[in-house]
Image (tube, rainbow, N blue to C red; front, side):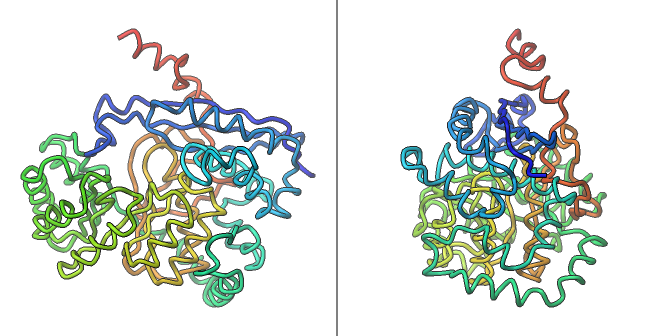
Length: 437
């Protein structure tokens, strides 16, 4: 069956997480976790589901961008797309008029991710496999054919990418069996949002420790003395052997970041995440160099525009942990390029997740990375946030602080129709109630 795409629907789905300060950090004090949610209809009845993550206001702009791309998708068959996936990726990102809105960055790239995520979901469903398994079972040449190498061949050529994937075929089956049995290591961000009270922090850390969590991330950046106090509190709660990371969400200038994090070195953080502007590659390099003697790495990537910026971050030794995002980059296609570049530079990948559906999506990519690219778990873990999974038909499964590989066909981002209806903005029941207040 060709699975010709006959329609594309996109909806504005928002959750009022700001009411309880879930997701709050130094720069995003009142986020409403939201999604531009895409459904592809085909002539065979099979559907593909995709999304891109937002923080509430402005989601309607992403919807406009998705609708602007719809004409490039409707009428194409799944076979036509996947037989030349690199070409289809370029079709979406290189339209002679629309690329001016990016290119490959900002709202238009978020929209591209939502559409491509739905296409990958459709492909995995057509094959009857979860997306990670679809990728793992692919021939290395087919994987490479999905990637647009334009602008990155000075760092990674098609031939080098193929060589990496071919070499990783050794031991692949054992690693897949290991993941099915043990899962992929995770860390939690849910205990220490910036807006949480000390009592909440203590209770959540205590609960997490009882559930087997040993890796914790703390939001910092609003007030130095308060950060020192909160980080000491959490380090005391989790003990010296647990892993602690800190995240400033782009709050500081370069010199300020170095000074601030140096003051927090006593709690022994593994990394400082997003210490400055996500676009400042040389600034990240300066911070990395200054913090290296303290044993603190720099992590970034959740707002890194595209594979070209990741290339430069790696070239400049500006990060020690690569944080891919399944909705910021151009879906699976572009993330594959970043995973391969990170491997070449021997920098561990620790994906950004959380939000709405990001955990569901990115688990597939990190499973593929371990099984088919990196073959290494050293200093590697995937973020987990325990909000909103109940709204998905195939929610993530966490067992002993590990992501267990999804079993259902697709990319795990189909939402329950009832949840979409209730949370659609502004007509859903949830928002009608909030607006009345």
